[in-house]
Length: 236
Ligand code: IPE
Ligand code: IPE
Ligand code: MG
Image (tube, rainbow, N blue to C red; front, top):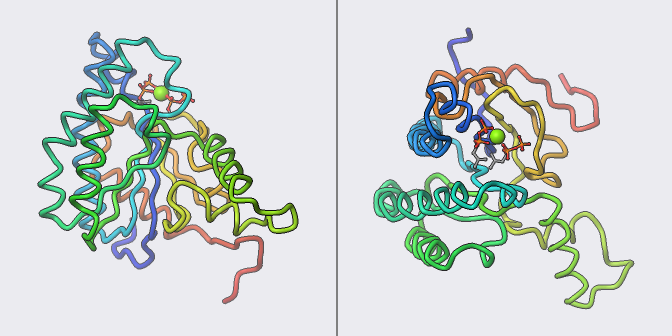
């Protein structure tokens, strides 16, 4: 493995998958996999900070995850609420700016309140930008963008890629350079559809609760080996 990291992605998106299977392998209820997954979130945020990643987006709940049993959904939301409460001050001390992407107004009000609190608390921080995609769906984000464009009275001839980008949930966040998915599945599952047009993808069989610094580094080394062309030709 190369020794030096020379090319670092500005924005990493992670599809944190495999919590359920981690628990099932141990004959535990799925929710304990989610609980264990929180530890991997903590480790990953530390890594992102350590390796000077500017933006980290963690896919935490998709617009399709509402299909899951009510108890699992409630557990996930209460886990988010508890950990945001617990970690908010700590993230703030570490100069992390926390934000959220997705249809937050459809989430339970207790969770929304703590989301808004942490967002406000860390608003001026200049370190890592940590984004949790909660009740997020890439298709829904594009539809929501188009609705805003129409509401604002833009004409057909005004609509172009820049305008659609401008009305996405977090328009100032750069597109992800690298998207990591754990658990062995090789699909996008409605994550950052618009923004991932030219992202590099890294898939690992490691289940999310087992994801650690070693795995994070493997993805970074793989990323720096990639030749990004963006449809053009490589300039040597
Ligand atoms: C990812 O783990 C967490 C969320 C989607 C919230 P899963 O719960 O999807 O775990 P598997 O895919 O069933 O193993
Ligand atoms: C994607 O994982 C969503 C999140 C990680 C939040 P899923 O487990 O929901 O995806 P599918 O159903 O396997 O495609
Ligand atoms: Mg899954």
